Image (tube, rainbow, N blue to C red):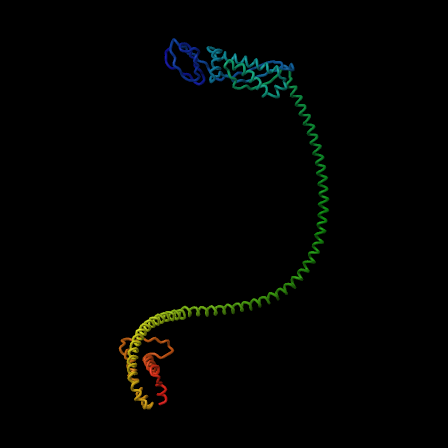
Length: 426
């Protein structure tokens, strides 16, 4: 024996004993290192074993002898270390046939014991219960040997006395009796049902015939009534047709007149729309532009009017200030002349009014020249007219004459002599 690694397949286990091990080393399906001469290696099979458990002529609880054959599958449990150790203690070094014999004897004994505790009817009718009891009892004993019962099945039950056959015959006779009774009852029920069905069929036939006759009578009556109603309706329909035709013709005429009215209305609407369109076109092309141009010219004229008015007011203010200054100068000169004339007045008391008028007429051109002198020196004169009075030179002349006309008032206020009245008297 050489030293080194030793292997085994999954269907066997290695048992190593000797040095370094207080108890055997169990290795199911694997490898181990073995020292030669100081360690011993043995193998134990883990294959499943099929056993045919035959128990001939066993008396049941009723004293009936029967024979039973069962099939069991057993094997040494390799996954449980305790069970494997028990198996090694029991079967190590034994052949597989010896192990099978021990398991078979154990199973056969338990099978016979279960058969003696049950009746033939229980074993025959409830095979599953019998197999379960044998499996449970045998497993509890074999597990102590390290053997597991994989399965147990009851294969066959037989007897030499014909007990099972008698049970079968009695059951067969019972079944046959029940079958004959059931057949008779079924035949009687069938005949009764056939009679009832025939009765119902005949009744249905009579009822159907009566219903058919009644339906035929009702049909003839209704048909006659319908025919009369149809004829009446046909006459009414013909009259209604004529009336409807007349109404239709009248409606057609009304519709034609309505169409003409609608056409005329549409023509009027078209004309009105055309007039409105032309008015809008006129409004857009002539009135609106004219109003816009009028508005523009009005705004321009208004702006020019304001500008001219402002210029005229400025110039008029300048003219007024200058006129006031000149008037003051004239007034001062007139005052001096008045004083001189007052001195001459006494000498002129004997003059008649005609002489005074003559003197006044001689002075007026001078006064007018003095009034117009400032105007003759102006480079530009802007005149604004509202359209109600005179315009241009006539307006300017009127202004000068208005100032000259105020001279008599000035003379009257200073001298008390009313020249205008004197002139009018002359």
